[in-house]
Image (cartoon, rainbow, N blue to C red; front, side):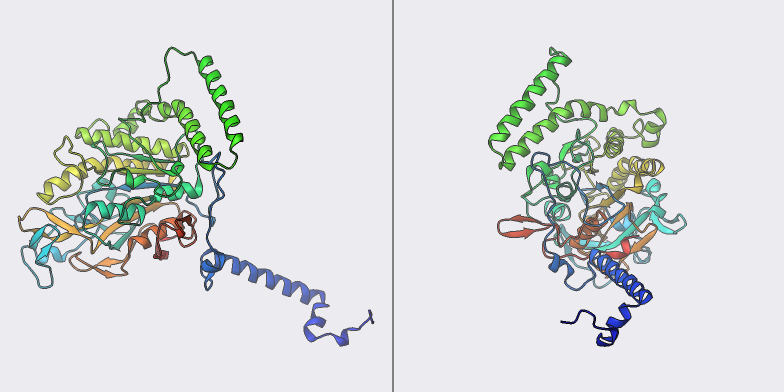
Length: 500
């Protein structure tokens, strides 16, 4: 056995590695290659990368299900604000400018259907509101939403969304849960399952109901479905805080503390007897959070403590009563996000009857009046919320998503005053952390009737939200009934142009 074999017995590659400069140079090249592979894998750009890595399941301590967790990828967005507008906002009267509507106003050009969701169709109708170029981007936005229009340069519009249904409940379910059926986890629940919360004393996910009540699909919009119940949204608003949080006034603070300490000891003792019972641990954690909320909720809902200029900015003292109440909800949304709540879903529209005579954006009759009344409620408070968050630096780590369940038709209904449901084309927009601001993606046709460029499903939409929040939608799963369930089912592609 020869231990002193000279370099002549080595291969050319082996001899080159004996040279220190060649060795260091090749090592540096290899390290660069490994780094490139890691980056490509993080963006799912390697062949079959998602399949090779398998499901990603957050490591959750059942006794502390709300603890903060890290995303799969490093991203800017740490929190999520969803502004949901039930009833279907008309894209062609807000953010999707279609000059051909004026050219064909009052006519019936070929190719448009004779009957839609609610019955026979009428003639093409131009928008009652004038569109103007906004900001440095020159984005055309209508006068229906003048305050939101001022933030055009902060928005990333998606104009080519489609959906599978023309019915409000099923469409709400689809955009919120990825399924037209009930019983599936909402986007907010997926996010809190994945990320937990930054605040141990407030719910990880809060759904702020419209002042007029719950949306058409109700609690399904923020439900946890087959995910653990700990990750469902907690619904309340500035007018109606969570019920049953008041403790007895006859009990002293010291007495309350002793009672809580005793409960903690009893719960720990009981849990130690059943160490593998995740449901018991989650139930205890839920009750402990409720106890903490007795102090945190009264504090975060003290909207009246905000300075007078904030109330003027949001409009809590002007306009309709519904607008005033919605403005207070917008302030509450900011306060919750400031306190580290992971997901806030703010609703503008309900299913119950309201004092202003309308309930949501579902304008089958008198479009100019009904959309106008809804815009009066939404525009100033929502714009103030976004401007306030921007001024405070909150958009640096908060992703904002504005959405509605489908669009509206470019022609009037046969009654001649409203627009019917349009699942074939509608608009949503993003703002904040990780977003390619001041841009638009996709396009509807010349009437806003069907998608003409880069058609997108709501699976694509939700896949993009998950990616902006740091997750691969194909790998973030939950094992249920023999299947690796995910928000996007077996569909979806990330809209990369949306990402900065």
